[in-house]
Amino acid sequence: MATQTANITALYEDVVADLIPYYDNFVLLPNPSIILNSYNISGGVGNTMKIPLVNSWTTANSSLSDNEAILGTPASVADPVNDFIPESVSLGVNKRGTGTVISEESLEDGGFETVRNAVVTRLSRALAQSTDKAGMEIIATGSETAATSVNDLTNNDGYSNTTLSGLSVDCSVVFSPEAVAYAVKRDPSVKIFNDVNSDNYQMVATLRNGFAQLRTDFIRTIATSGAFDANSLVNANLNLYSESIARLREANAPTDGSGFYLAVVSAPQELALAKSINGVGGISSGAIGSVSQDLANQALLEGMIGQAIGARFIRSNNLPGFTEA
Image (cartoon, rainbow, N blue to C red; front, side):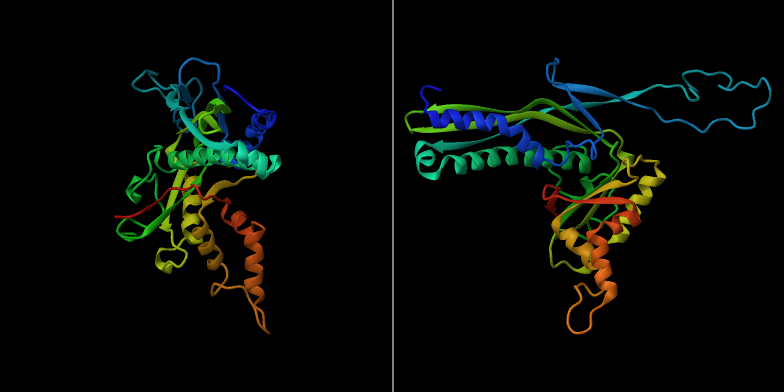
């Protein structure tokens, strides 16, 4: 930075101090209650790490006779019995970045606090949204490349590509906290440059992080309509989520500390789920109210539906979405 003012120096120091706390507040996925396996690989060599996985195991032998071999005869590579032969998953980090331009006049005319809050919010939320979008794509498909069809999804329990043909699609994810891993190589950081020709300041924020699927059998996806006024035949409903939870239980997928899986839904899916427990789809009103509808509304608000089917529901605007061909 060639030249600077006292105001821009103070702004830069505040942004540097506040960027990570604001980012942590806005980002959803790098949270140990959502993704248990989180790693900080800053300071290490390379941009990829290998995560060992416990291999599958078999049921213990029963009704063994005295002196009968427990490991089997013979215990070999071809017949490993329950030998621990771990596999591994590679997790690579990607660089994410955003920036903003601040004019000298904006500091003079707009007020320091207004500009500071706007800059911190823009930078931190942009990085957080980029992180969550990448993580949701990884959970749903195994790749950061944006999904373009229901056929790209991992273990879809929602509607088929033929049913959703020509419609906008939202993909919900239902998963175990141990299904995915997260790694960070560089925490959110900020750099500033003074463009004297335009008399402005360019602030750029970057970070490096990444996600990886660890166990695909610990992940279910639910493809439904992404429209608010969708036909009920393609809407999200509790039966779809109940099936996903049942399949996770069948796979012995671990829950969080409270015994719940995570179910991340879009805003249209949340509305459809709320309507599905509201009887005819509305809150009771008028001279005669419906106690059952009011109780259902309260149940959703207090998370009792989540407890009933075994999932903790979270709303996100960063889930995969596309138009099915």
